[in-house]
Each structure stands twice: as structure tokens, then as C-alpha cells.
Image (cartoon, rainbow, N blue to C red; front, top):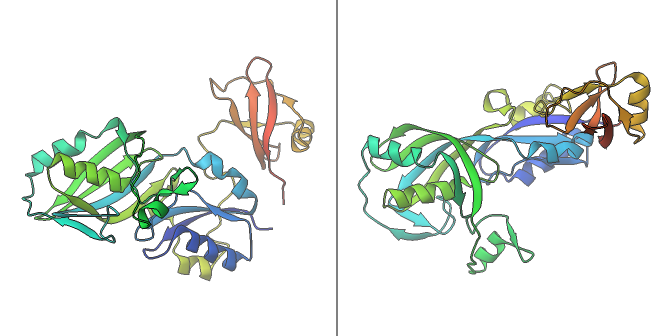
Length: 292
């Protein structure tokens, strides 16, 4: 069975699920999943996992993400982007560049953000966007996110273009809305490209046409996105024990406070994720990957 990761360049107009369906058809696989949903209107990096790599998706969700964003001033919609129903129009004067830069920089750091109603967050078993489509608005609790950097790229009479790097769980539509509040003008997110998800970058992504034309070229190793986890190489005997679910001893304790480890056999083949007890130097299997 084919296993690995693909750095997909999702086109606008497709859902993340549409991309997964395309990959399933192309590789003739059922076990396909993705990390970090993109809105249908957005484009950019969408990491997709095939086969055994789907078991590693949970270790890819904590990575930072980068976006190129355009917001348009003067009106707001129910969805927060330019695909929604217009709620209001206002004549606004674009602030000067220095004021916009000051507003953008005010978001850098750890902040609280309220998720938009049009999101997949569940409240009492219902997704928020399902409630929103039914005309129901509910109170959302703020979430703690981190904005590492925001860089202003361009402004004109109605639009602001900027790059942002942020933590998981950041809603760019909500960020745009909050920027609008600080410049005292309603805004919508009018363009969004995700340029990076952890080690997956826009420059190294593959279009659907490229994937369809050469499916093997696009496939990345299972451990491609796990570079932030320390690596441990086991002896042949320990590797065999690890692969049948047994805890094994490891003599080198150079893993600081991290307890998760990428586990490899002596042939440097990736065989799973383990958790080390730094007091006993025992590694317990968390995810065992069967070599194919």
C-alpha cells in the first residue's frame, strides 16, 4: 500500500475534502486525510497523508502556519469574507501607512480571538457554520492564539495586503475583522493564500495536475513533517521489540524535556513514535509504523 505525505497546492473553489477525494482516486487508496482545513475560496498549502501516514496527522497539527492575506474595507458580510451576504456598507477612508503598520503590529504576541460563526467548531454537537446557515448566532468563547509576525505589503484606497505567521487555531477572517475594528471600518477578507504549514511551503507544493501527471514524484516520506521531534535509533533487537509493542531501553538521554521521539531502526528506516521516560530511559511505543 502506498504511504507518505503530499504537499498539495489547493486551488480556490475546492473544499479540503474535495482534494482528499481527488488523492484517493489518483492513488487508488481509501486511507487519505489532511492537516489544517482551508476554506473553499482560499488556496495554498494543504498537507495530505496517505496510507500509514494518516496515523501521524495528529503530530502535524501543532505547527505554525503562514498566510498572504488581502482585506477590503468598506463593507462586512455574514461569513467574514467576500463570498458571504453583505450586511452593511460604509464609506471609509484608508488610514495612512504608518497607522496601518501600528494596528497590525498590535496583534503580534499571544492574544485572544473569537472564532467566526462560519467555522467547523462544534457547540453541543452542532458545527457553527450549520447554526449560522440556519440563522442562529451563538456566543463563542475566545481562544488563545499567537501571532508571530505581521508584515504590511501594500495598501491602496480600499485594500490592505499583508503576510502573517501564526499558531494553529488562528482564524484569518477573525483577524481581518479585528483589524477592521481597530481602524474603525468594516472589512472582509477578500483573498487568502496559505504559504506554509510547518515544513510544507508553497514553493515546494504540487498542483493537482502535477500530481495526476506524476503521482510518485509528489510523494514525501512518512516522517517528513516530524523533524521537530527528536530522533532515536534502536538496535536491531530493540527495533523488533518496539515493532511488536514492547517498551525498550535506550542508553542515550539527550532529549531535554521532550518525551516524544521519532524511532528508527539501524537501517535508518522510520518505524514509529515512542515516548521516553527520562528517569528509566525506557521507550514505550505510541505509534508503530509497519514497514512496507
